[in-house]
Length: 369
Image 1 (cartoon, rainbow, N blue to C red):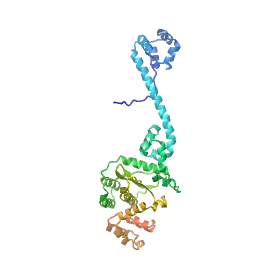
Image 2: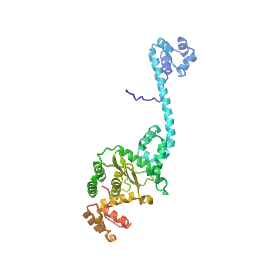
Image 3: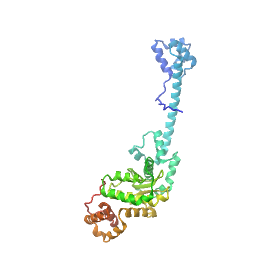
Image 4: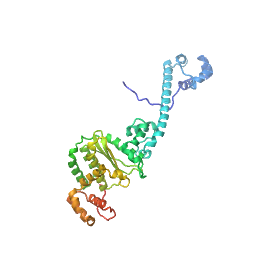
């Protein structure tokens, strides 16, 4: 069956408008023309103003008086009726869409989505877009997402630095964009090889973002870089996407050490948790905005440990970290970084975190290149 995408006009043109043009073109007065076809002037005026339709009998009369086929007038009437019906249906759909939008916009980050050019401003289109991004069929399902386990912890939180709607909107957008990515099959047994190749990319620090994304894709892991909105202090998220693990990152700090740790933290969730649970989802905020209960969970501690050990050999760090306060200088950091084959800013970041001291001077660049 073939369907045609019919363009709906802004307004429907009644054949009475065409009739008036023909009457005037043939130099008839409305009174004389009405008499000719056996109508009263009032009846003719109703046709001209679109209050009365043209039927088969009138079409034949117009054919004889104006020389225009009856089929033309019947077709003009049919087109008017169809256009009018389409316009009325469109207006009804628009009104219904506005009503749905006015209720549903409470559950989506409107400002953020506008900034990201996700929303068009037309509720008919935007309602459908939102349903696709959130994977829901209606508003009730959209509202119900907030009580799901993954997001419930934000709803009950006492912290005011983030907004549940914004966080959920960011995560759903990342998940939606991840669905569009096609990557090879994932094999968790390639973990060690991937870790070493990622460390080499970070060490060289050249086109890091693109190279890391390409490397993860090669190993069957999707990586989405997605800017954040207001009150969305998210560092990263990890989840399953159509049979492959996926990671979303905000690059909030735009620093190589933060990028590397967040990346390896999310990989920790992938290899330590997602491989055993294809419904799990981990949303990680910056440490200042995260609740203690979540920070101290077994999953977060395991992901942190994976990141620390993956970036810097555990035994090497154990030896180096003795009398660490005396090694917080560029010379010692660079020497150790060269030994363990990692970028110096990663070592310095680990030292600052361990000593809780981020104020010491350094000439080591943290820029992502």
